[in-house]
Length: 576
Image 1 (cartoon, one colour):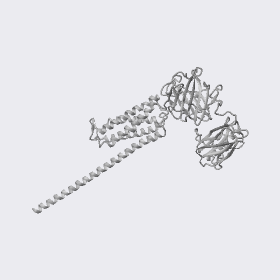
Image 2: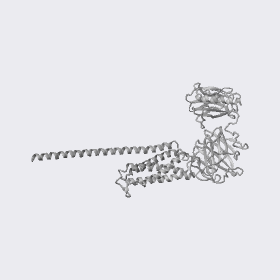
Image 3: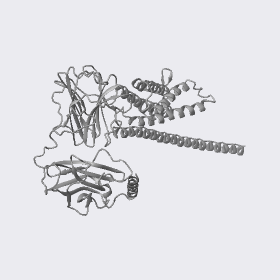
Image 4: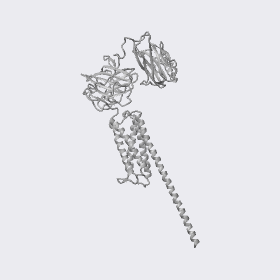
């Protein structure tokens, strides 16, 4: 055990030493095998860079033109490996085109078997030539690790697979093994993407966005085609981690029959699972799926399989001839096939459907109607009615003080009507998430806590107004202060709560435009308040100037009258 311990210590020292300065010179031989830079952080999952070649076949001695390109990057490591054994050493050798940007490395026992950067200078495109060796494997795949910044990098970005002549292309049937699929059920590679033909006529389809084309790069697609006693299922979507769908008796996660297609080291494993509450799914050791195929091209993951309509021997598998809510989710997965919680709300059908019944072509929603209504009502209440109500009370009181509505001053009646509308909308909106969730949400962060605080202040404000002292009472000034401070606090907390709520997956708002729109509304209201304050100040100053002029006129008239009286008295006595 001494030698492995020493080797581990040496490896840790190398990584620690390298993590101080990274590999700015491109001498990254320590990372030849794993292709992982010792930068002290985890790699990104969705690559931004692409590898291309100028040929699909090669013979020993051929020169293959290889390109690596994408957004600005600082470092890279490029290799060619046996496509059937990607953990094997690099094969072949490279020839440089631009020595200012790239340099040759010796990985393992093969000279010039890898290419890396020469400096941290930002680059967008690297061109090299790969020379096929005499003992080349039947299929070769190009892999690249790209460093955008020190903490931002991608490991083993998959490139094209090239083959020797008379070797089956990887785009034809490619049999692989999978821990998640029984050995008796072979897995094949899909030669072409799915299509939407037959949706609504011969097969049951779910598409998001509605009527999208599964051959596109932004379409989530799920189809069920009944064939005698079985159902053929196709699932597709933009994901480099995993795609999953589940059959559920309700619109809540838990107690569901799930099916997952997981990208594990650039090969897709298809498995069944049973969801228990909100805990991660546990993949079944036995698989009830047949005719499994998959495809992973340009960031779009596609998989298909067949299962029997009824599976009495498999616990947790639902019968497909009943009606269910259907969930469709996507998320990230690590290289080992471990899946992570989806970052956004799953697509959920609006009702229950029997996928073996009448063929349908439907969509779904990533934002439940009750949650949409909750957000809309809160927006109307705290961005519209309450803001107008405050403006009326603050700036229209002098204007409407002599106008009456139902026996009260008009400004007061309008203010009270708008504030009661705010209380009503807030109260209705407040209960909607509890109805949807069936209780308290543990996944919404500070949003529900601040929301409850706003609701309490919203109820307290009109109750306090009911005990308002008369206008000239000694405690009226104290009431005015409490009334203003409570309302202002509620408005500020409501806006903060809405900003927090906009990022929750259940609303599925378009980021970042939702934030920009909200900032625009808040800025508009703040700007309106400021303009009205300036206008009010100018009016007050104008009135003060007019009042000062009037006082000065009165004072001058009084002085003139006094002087006239004084002269009259003097003249009277002189005449006497």
